[in-house]
Length: 438
Image (cartoon, rainbow, N blue to C red):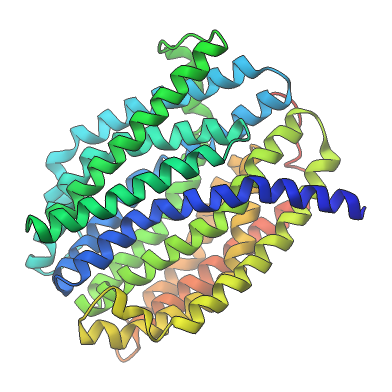
């Protein structure tokens, strides 16, 4: 048993460590924007916070392009049908292209959408500028998601790491040049990110075409296959919708509490996204390995892998939580010079740090159930988790309370705690252990 555990650990690390680098690079795009824009002023930072919330929602709702593609490809690979696995990835990329075109068509709505948050006029103006330009990079981001799902399903997490690292470096240089060198401010932050995103998408498209030609897989769009791919992603879409609703509700409540609270929440959410992506590296390994194991009909492997991922998730959550707690009182200076934001931020970061072991448990089991194709359960319990969270979040609007502390206590322990409970109960059952090609 010891040998088997060690073998599982090695395979988890083989996939998770490169995935960690790639996933950390994704929120690093937003970290760069936040750090550079934060020194322009609290209004600019709050504006980017609103714009980022909308963009994250759009991309997050379509995360099934990666999370749906990975287990689909992995199952077919585990079943011994590599050409069909490549075709599943190509279908995911076509769906990304179609979805991206629809989102770009919505560019004229950037201003009205930014205005829905009810922020001060200057904040809304910055949000509209950031959002209007950033939308042009959404098709590229969706292509990257789908193609990354293809690579992960093929058990390759190293190539996405290389691409993400180069993309992050390009984004940092471009943003610094455009924000301060050219003097474009918030618009420069958005434009630099868009350019970097399209560069990454170009490489992933080349990779997908190369793999398809090697296996003799046709590259044309097949509307029937596209429809089936979209259908299987429907439950994942609903699951993600509940997650994004929770994040958007948090931003809306923080907006009502004032500009300083909103700006501090933007910084905290940026750090949460970074830590979440780090913890999600284990979930990515779980998706790829679970899909392959169940495709091969190996239930024992799936069970053993789930147990090891739980241990890794909680342990890694303890580590990153301790690191965040150690720097909670000094980290704010990296992102802003505003005294009100600096004074408010530590309580949010302390609460977030204490919840990281819970987050680690949540993320690995989310990856396990996605890898097993249990999206329907994730979607339905996502609605339940949201129903538990919203009343707790609204307590932040009561007079006389520390709104920022209430927001992050509700999110860190109310919302993440509810998710941990529903995921843990499911993982203890056998209902999700379905084997075969689909």
